[in-house]
Image 1 (cartoon, one colour):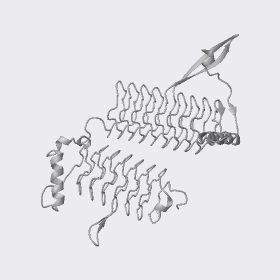
Image 2 (image 1 turned 90 degrees about the vertical axis):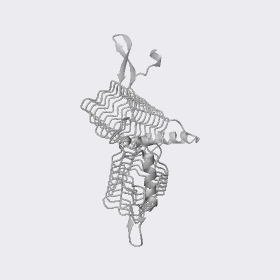
Image 3 (image 1 turned 180 degrees about the vertical axis):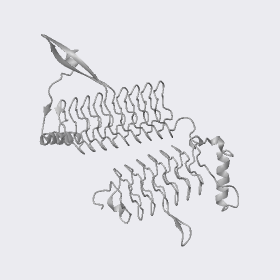
Image 4 (image 1 turned 120 degrees about the vertical axis):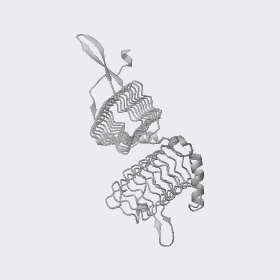
Length: 437
């Protein structure tokens, strides 16, 4: 058994130049080039060094010191970071898909926007040989993964394993944690506002004092979960939030037909559709429906299929459309002020202004909207109002932003280039691409 255990030894310190040489050879290895070699940096002291933006997938960092290291944007997919010291490290935007982080210390680390899909952050054990008189004995040290005070806001923790992890005061705001295993995790006073915990297992977790405002807990297992003092205001569970569908005056299918008749007859027949405050999640697909001029202020459309729907000049202020499918939808002139569309699919959606006549046009109002990680590939946003919008990590590839007002908008990590912003209003906006004033 002793031969299979890791022997604790003093860490080896190397310079930045030496580290760069190891990384270069690893990248050659990853590209199947001659002279390449997998990076094996187990038990090294790399604290404070830079590995930012490099490809270190499948590298071995077992029990390595990376405290205060710069790992922003680094690819660490399938890397071994077992019992690693990553305290205060910068891992913003890093990719840690299927990484082994068992027993690692991420205390105070910044993992904003990091991808930890299927990563293993459960507890781990280290064994070292110690002398007791003249006898050599094994000392086994059990280490829970330490995420205290870490920032994992906007991180992708889908299917991640965090059972037994210590995450006191950790920030998981707007993190995607679908199917995550948090069995017996210590989440006391953690911030999980807006986190998507759909299908997560929190059995036996300690979430006392945690903030779960607006979190999505549909399908979550919460057997023996401690929630004393937790803030669950606005959280979505399997129970209807707001007003259920059965409070509508007629079945929704009938109301949709009446609304389509009202739109087609310019208000002469049928009746307008008002879904304000209604939880629409149980309505099924609304794909390609005629919802022009629909009023749905504060309605909940979480995960609803609205692909190809016509919602021109719709009033959806404060609505929850997180994870909704709005691809190819006609949203011209829509009002989405302060709505939530994190992780929504808006590929090819039309959010242009709506021309009423020769002199009147209604721009789409997306002021204060939250669209983190939304997919806006090929979307049209001509003259749209995006004042104060949060577009962090959104995909705006090929989106048309001519004349858009992006004043005070947050574009950190957004996928777009500076040519797309030509003619847009950018006063006070942050996270702009390089070269954009």
